[in-house]
Length: 114
Length: 114
Image 1 (tube, one colour):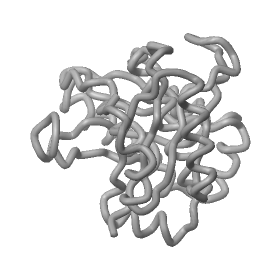
Image 2 (cartoon, one colour):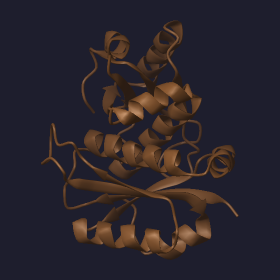
Image 3 (cartoon, helix red, strand yellow):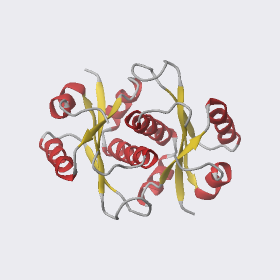
Image 4 (cartoon, chains in turn brown, orange):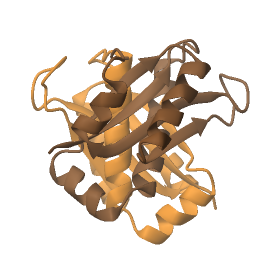
């Protein structure tokens, strides 16, 4: 089964694209560093499939964080240091996986592409 | 000396923000996986400083790739599979580091924020 990672990004913050890219990268790397090495290796060999999805707001972001935890999926919630564009401590995005595509899709399949 | 990673993204492709976020994450993760574990560990403890910068086009992207290589900096050039928005094989972005902020800035200090 192919592996994938999803990066859920808050749409309500209207992050500038470069800021969004850096935050997404932050979440992605942190989730990778928290994952089992063998899983990361396999995912890397498959091409490291990943996709950015949008969540409406902080509440929805936390709902998916809980869902991921309930399903024992590795995840990384990112809180911005807030030096530039947004207030310190603002939750910006959440990476889930890499894990089985089916598992990930079951959780986040309803979300739209960012 | 603090460590940082830069992610250089082509501005001419006018990537949709979600696509840009996923490509930047791709570059960031790949450069991390290519880096020495101790350096990644240190960078992570410092907060994994990273920033997205813009390059004008493919030529400029390759110029920075060469510069990074000439300076023995770990880097990862990302070529998109092109399933969605852009043509297959399109070079989208380049992550450099994590490495010493001074070294990175010396190379990419003139680039503007994406």
